[in-house]
Amino acid sequence: MATITKKELIDQIAVATKQKRVVVKKIVQGFLDSIIVELGKGNRLEFRDFGVFEVKHRQARMAQNPKTLEPVKVPPKRTVKFKVGRLMKQTLSEPAQGGAEFSPAAAGSSEG
Image (cartoon, rainbow, N blue to C red; front, side):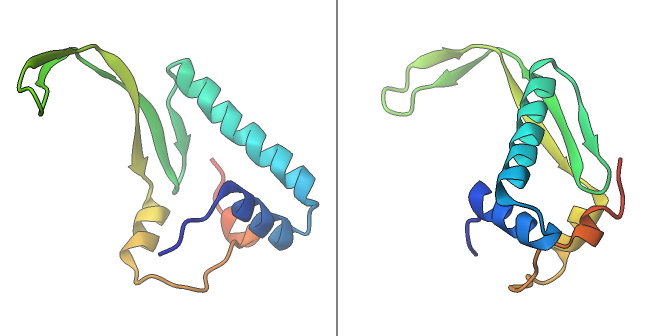
């Protein structure tokens, strides 16, 4: 299993779509920035077949410091939950494919 960086993903998309890397980088970064802004507003983001991002509110709670065993108050916080979509779930349930690459046709097959 490998780690794919944003740069590598941008390179893959640029090659697959025959677009300049700088254009793809600007679009991808704009997309990611928009996700952050919308989640910051508390909005739910749904990408059909890919998945759903939503903000969850965690209640304040008491925890325990594992070293000292003292009780520690954990403040409330917001976190992001991701629920896997149908196509991703289906893809993940298949055996790993080492040579799979970005396909613009597959990526644009279901917008929403």
